[in-house]
Length: 270
Image 1 (spheres, helix red, strand yellow):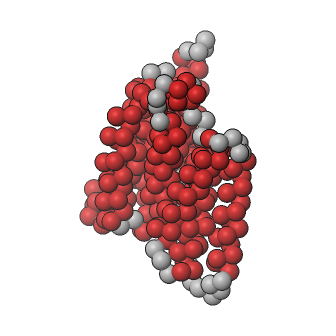
Image 2: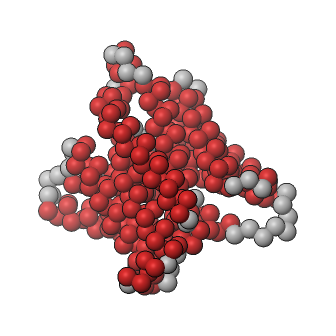
């Protein structure tokens, strides 16, 4: 098994998985507590339009999908905050619009050989050392942001209006959180894929909330859960010869439900 680490693509995927475990473990708690779980799925699928735009223009699909996801996340957040639409409505609109744009963009490149499945379901062979560095840079920005603003984010989550009156810049915090959400999702697309990544937005917090109601413990449990799922799924995919992203998500889902049943048996009154 150790010989796998001599393969550059596997080492890159392993390092990226470790970093993403920390990112999703921290992010998931705030996404779930702010009832933005569906937004993660919407932003992930919005990346399809960005990938297709990159294919059409010859630009790096990572950069175009990143721009698409940030734009969608921020616009949805602004529209919801100003009472124009609900989260569900905004996500539904942008989700469909981006997928439609993606189909239109790809139709303009008829006959172009493009491995769309690697973006939809992930492909660890596509993970490069540059992706590792980008993921590490995002972690270096996101971890201090959470550490510094965690109490303000929690205050905003519990009562947005009171937090605003109390001087918390809720609009700015919300926007920054949405930008990080978009960035982390785009980084993970190469490993997990557009279709499957939304599971990693909600599963860590779901598992953490089974363990505790203390936010520190929930976040730590979420990080450990995601690390086990992503790293374990990576090795399991090699042994079973299955797609890495799909194996990670399937393993994570099964582990979550097994934990749910175990905790309910242990604490029937919970």
